Length: 250
Image (cartoon, rainbow, N blue to C red; front, side, top):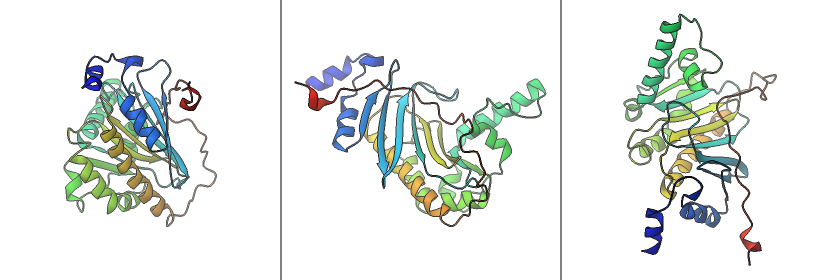
């Protein structure tokens, strides 16, 4: 009862009550830090020894309102595996914005400042989701190599997205899942963080990562000279505040 009252009157920003999230991170052996100067936090973990980072905080995309959750993991995937799946409402919004940008300014190409998810909708062919009937009504997808994108989405990942559509994504928030420059990314609108939502996002991300790794084992990398250090707008991290080690507290 007392904890419920505390949460009810918790103020936003640095005063937000994140005890449930920080306790969960500690119990599961993951690092938790509040973001410096922002209403947000960072959680660090690993999948099979490979580190990932989860951030929750102010949005880095105009199409996200309130706060967003972001997940990133370095996988060293082949450059050919540039794949994107996103909520259909977001896909339609970005396509409309791209068209309006072209027609209003008579441009012939999208500027480099546009996010990858917008540029890819123009650059890459759409993935035919006719065989994935449970996904095509609520999600869209594009890829530099559509056959790879379909192979990634089929099977376990399609099932995981379908399950998320009934839970984590039931209200159809802006949602993006992509592989870019060898990395895997997840981005979605999440107004208030809960342990259940974080666990659901991680579960979906883990399936996406596992399927990408499996697919990459059968995909030769034809771009060994690809500059993996080139700038990317897919991820712009904020710096967390240092957190005191609880073992040093008196």
